[in-house]
Image 1 (cartoon, helix red, strand yellow):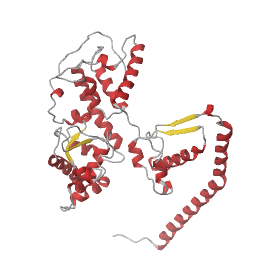
Image 2 (cartoon, one colour):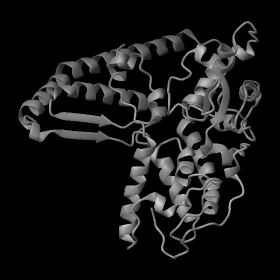
Image 3 (cartoon, helix red, strand yellow):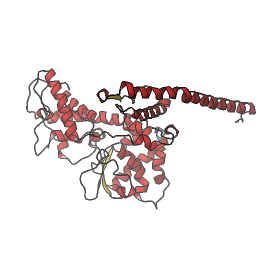
Image 4 (cartoon, one colour):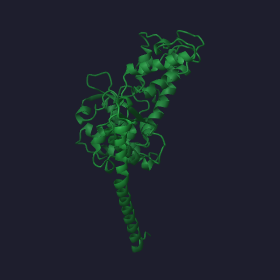
Length: 377
């Protein structure tokens, strides 16, 4: 039988809470009256005396905020405090502070009371990092040149160690890029695995690419899970509902997959009830009068935003992903025009996605060079 807390216990709890509030106000007053004045004076000295000349222009880069550098309960407060400090340091004319932050962490931040109601002030300073195919190719070319110099090889570009393009298998470089989310770590990881699967040869064959894709795809799916598991616990089970999916899914096919995602709420092993419930409310509520976009849009947008799904509108054959158009599914009207849905190619092998692309099968041991030199990228 449950017992009600005694009046003494309630009074004690209220007294403790009052004391906590009083201490917080006292500490805040000390900081405002003493420490902030000192910090403001320090910034004036930094601006007028230390970095007074344009020749002293200084960049400070802050990275690795995704690592376990502090208790998770304090992460939000400390990062928001960092943002405030960076904003205040804008008054130092010859100083630029850059904070590198992964998208999933930024989306997880609480801009409520911590931002003082000025969320837009911080979001206006955000510069999304996007890479083009040419930039990624230039990056890998530079790494290959450095690696080849260390090993007395003469390789200047990645295409020199890839199979020649042909009508049946296509362009190997484009094949690799198609299976990334256009991020350096994806491309570097894929090329490294291709070299590892080449068994010490200086050339990468199509067969090596095929073997490498199996390992690479599984690793990328695990990486996607790890990247978003804080925001979306149990997201790996959502990915599994797309196993053996068609390479190009119709709206009806996609709806069945999304229904399977939402039905995870009925499984005891699923740990993402907190985030999946609001995304599936319109479907579970049986609101038949709502449009397809209103019912399935929330969960579809989530899978699109994290880079797992792509879409194409009626009459379009080339899928669009968040890396191409981040706002492609922002409004219901945009979703209403979508005709087909696609799992990103990076995860095709890991999820055994069915595709009619003949270049995914029938690999051969073709290679242009069987010399023993190799590169460690």
